[in-house]
Amino acid sequence: MENKNKRAFLEAFLFTLGIFVLGILFGMSMENKNLNEMNDAFLNSQVTMFDTYLITTLVNNETSCDLLGQEFVKIANKIYLEAELMDEYEKSSQVSENIKIVHKKYDVLRTMLWSTIKQYSDKCSNYDTVVYLYEYNSEDLTQQANQNVWSKILGQVKEKVGDQIILIPIAVDQNLSSLDTILSNYDIEKYPVVLVNDDKILYDTVTVSDFLTYLK
Amino acid sequence: MEWLTIIYYFFTFFAMYFLLLFVLIYFKNEKKIFLDPKYTKVRSLSIVVPCYNEEKTIGNTIEKLLASDYPGLEKIVVVDDCSKDNSYSKIKKYEKKYPTKVMALQTPKNTGKAAGSKNYGAKFVNTELIGFSDSDSVCEKNAISNMIGYLEDEKVAGVTSRVYVQNTKNILEKMQSVEYKTIAFTRKIMEFIDSIYVTNGPLSIYKKSVFDKINGFDESNLTEDIELTWHIVNFGYNVKMAMNAIVYTEVPRTLKVWFKQRIRWSIGGMQTTKQYTPKRKATGILGKFIIPYFILGWAIGIAGLFILLYRGSRYIFSKLMITKLSIESQVALITWKDLMISPTVLLFLGIFLFIVGVLFLFLSLVYCREDNVNYTIFEMLIYSFFYVLVYPPILIISVVKYLRGYNTW
Image 1 (cartoon, rainbow over the protein chains, first blue to last red):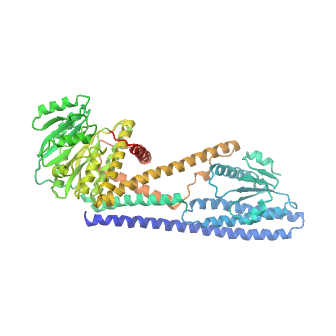
Image 2: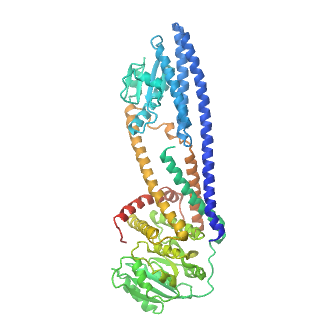
Image 3: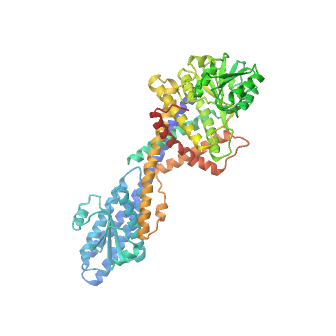
């Protein structure tokens, strides 16, 4: 075998390695960009959440209740849209798992929002609260299918009624003590589950029109 | 990182390595691909043609061999393996017509394998070179003379030809035609790294002394031509391929026959690998590259199929569940989100691999183009997306059959 052809074995290996390293570096930079974007969005949402939380301390009459409702819807919508974006980024994430941490941080934020809303649900009832609880790490195909369809139903509901509802999707398997504490007050048998205004618990998927009947 | 992703990376790496290796070797030897050395000395040659139930094609095979422009072709030894049709009487007629050139033989009893009749015929050969040609293959006039020059090199013990498909009417035949061209081009590329792993049945020529030294074909092997080549390489000899030696062969016309042939090829490959790994110690390029290339190819094929089945069945089950629930809930079955493909590292690497693979396929077709055979885009798509994907299931069936002791033609 000629030397130039002998060298081809090593050269092909180095080429392949080079392409792989380039590919992985490209992937890492793409994932880092997504991660930075999500971290920035999270910081922004966090500030909005703190602002909303401060507003709650100022509520003392029905006029403030309107303001509070608007603030809750605003932050919930923001987080909901960011969750959709994060969902896309998570699918692209193959090199690092940092995006999962951001997901967890968002779940804390959503739990905080839900907890805050719960405190004012007696005083202010001019909006509907829909909490969608699902399992983030589920491998069960039936459960995944259920979650997929529930997402579509709630997405359509949100499109139909807009700012009348506060939609909060929260992953329950993130080891969040605060969330576990809240959930211990409910008699939840399985996930996914949808809590409508804290009194209606839905396990099985329903039609959008049926779902609308559960709202105020 | 999940385990399946790691496996994907592993497979992509090896697939890319082999593909880039071939591409690199191609660029390094581009000008030599069609440079077959001319022979300077006429050496005596006999061609053995094993025949079983080939009354329709054997005549043409003999005629084309007789028309060869190589002056050293002394005998065409046609061995009938106790055919059930009129093959033998037809061969006898040719012997009568060309008594100095054609020898008609019949095995004492049916050997059941081409190796049996090939070895039987080889016993009657006393020329310096010995060649073998299938009874359903026809060679071009200059095919043999384009091969002989390689055998002037002391280190070279065997030379093989470029095989084209003779029958290209239906889609299966067309697919095989594309496949044979890719095989021919890849084989020539592999020659530059001394890694030709099979000298084909349609037309290959060997030094008789080496053929005798390794005791001819292994009759217990289903792919005696692979075994013989490995045996030659393991003895330290080289095997070459003459790109200007063109032979046309008949390929299976029906799926059933094609499937049976592929099973035989796969099982033969497994038999040979088993023979050469623990028993006879594989040395040189055979042990360092050819056998690992074979084994890795199978591993990638089989594991790839299982992953595809695992992922595919999960995907189908999940989609069925989603469809059922979506219909019940009266929500859209498919949304834009479902159709979006997320850009991932693996996707980029996969696209790169696919593009290089398609370019290599086109390169093969350019180097092996025939004036009267063209392929449509549809045929190329079928080949790239379906035909090559049939190999892994065949491989798994072959493994099962091999483990059960399957050993018939």
